[in-house]
Image 1 (cartoon, rainbow, N blue to C red):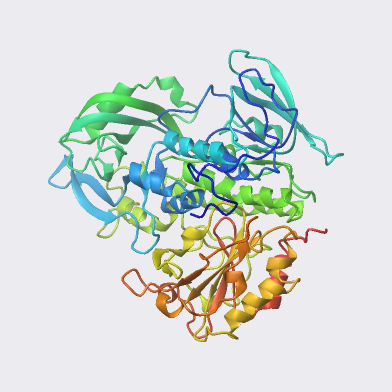
Image 2 (cartoon, rainbow, N blue to C red):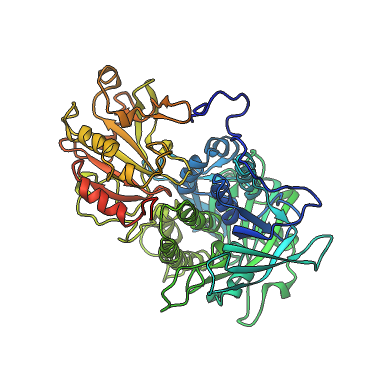
Amino acid sequence: MQFYKEGFRGGNPDVKPTAADLRARGAYEALPDRVDVLIAGCGPAGLCLAAQLAQAPEIKTMIVDPKPGPIEKGQADGVNTRTMEMFQAFGFAETVKRESYWVNQTAFWSPDPRNPAHISRIGRVQDVPEGSSEMPHTLINQARVHELFLEVMKNAPTRLEPDYSWAVRDLEIDPTTSDHPVTVTLENTGINAGETKTVRANYVVGCDGARSKVRSAIGGELHGDAAHQAWGVMDILANTDFPDVRQKCLITSATEGNILILPREGGYLFRMYVELDKLNPDERVSSRNFTADHMIEAANRIMQPYSIDVKEVVWWSIYEIGHRLTDRFDDVPAGQDRNPRVFTAGDACHTHSPKAGQGMNVSMQDSFNLGWKLMQVFKGRSDPSLLRSYSAERWVEAKRLIETDHQWARIMSAPAGESELDSGDMPRFQKQFVENLEFTGGLAVKYDASALTGHETHQALATGFEIGRRFHSAPVVRVADAMQMQLGHVAEADGRWRIYAFAGQDSASGSDLYRLCEWLMNDPDSAAQKYRRPEEDIDAVIDLRAIFQQGFDALLDQQMPEILKPCTGKLGLQDHEKIFCVDHKEAGDIFEMRGVDREAGCMVVVRPDQYVALVLPLDAHAQLSSFFDGVFRSPST
């Protein structure tokens, strides 16, 4: 973390200097008449987006929610490794790591062959495959995740806070104007219930759940099916003789159904997903009048010969499994050639079962994808057509999620020993779990070739940084202070692109790496110069980092290119934190770990949402310019 670039300022460095012209807040302050972006819903998707946009004072952002305030408990709890990598960019991954439960192992229980009325442990697997991420799979209350995003918003230059007790009732888009063309009708849900307020916006993002008013207003529908299976979920404080209660467990009984146990933060709390009854095709779960006691009774039947003695039910809910997906994630119907103005994210455009732990994670990845694109458009760095890529990229991933979760939910609800699902020496539900580890970790996303994701022509130069997939961090040493760290952790959620330049065998002055640095620094048509404004720092749009093969002590006295030690900020202070080398101690050699060509080196271009956009030779200046010409527009246009 770097600070003091604009001068010394005491106190918490996470609290950014306040931007000018902030909106007045207070109990009696009126809502604004116009905003740039209106976000509906303070769930994970909405808050993730708001936390990004809050960093940009030039974007007037408003986020509303019908609830009277933040949630305190319940709902989602799983944070996969990909989301933890994203949390690192927001600055609170270490907080989550300290407070959360780490899912290290998953245990599998099924009917005991000697006594099928009882369950017995049949296996155990490592939950996060070795080397798949430097981050753990964690479990933490969704309300705490919300709180961390709210803190980022409040500390941001805009001091953004939600407007609670307001819900979107309807919206209209005026295609004849480009000036705040979306008119949103908000309805008060609090002490002034029924009162309405009209707000005009340039863009609206519906993160308002499965019954989304935003989706309905743009003609979106959720299509899919239901499994007609009732499940219950409860967070409890309880005593039990079940030996694996502090490990994630998948339990299937012979005749009574299935359970998923998820230990929670704090050492005592744990969550249980409990299978209840099948539903008739025309039946809704609400008609059964299930209670927490029904769940506890079912859990005790399924877990025989073990039992649980519940001391406190912290939160509980009953739900039915459904898998549904909208046709598009924006307001542009198929066949129309125009840029979108309204978007949906999270449950507003895809719903599925909660047992794979993907709901909160995928919702945040939706808005993490959209946030930097909105920032880039508002800052004039890209044409608004960039926003078309949001629906194109995220719909494909949501479809993959629905298909995988549909299969997983079916297996989780199948009777133990069903021949169609159980074969070989491993029960089907355990085999499927192992096969899905990349998916459940959030690491299976791969964006197709597009203007934002290049072709694999030079993939062989860095086989471990797969184009279209997230940047897979690896250990390095920062040269200036011999700091051992993860290279991916230099990336913040600030909307900037990154170029990681890996030096080849020849890394002296005059090498390909040095020529790349000199071109980026001095050529007015280079990617670093062309798209920034004259008053902006050299790394305002594209942040260049260099990684050498030598040890740090061999590089301390080497003359480095100016762009790797740039003077930035109003004081013109030199940045010493852009140069890295391999970790020769114990953590591993990044060149070897990620298949980087030692002889030639390469550059890895990474999007603001941490996905690899391109791998190129160090001397491919023209190709780099051509790629960025398809992403950016120069400030003069």
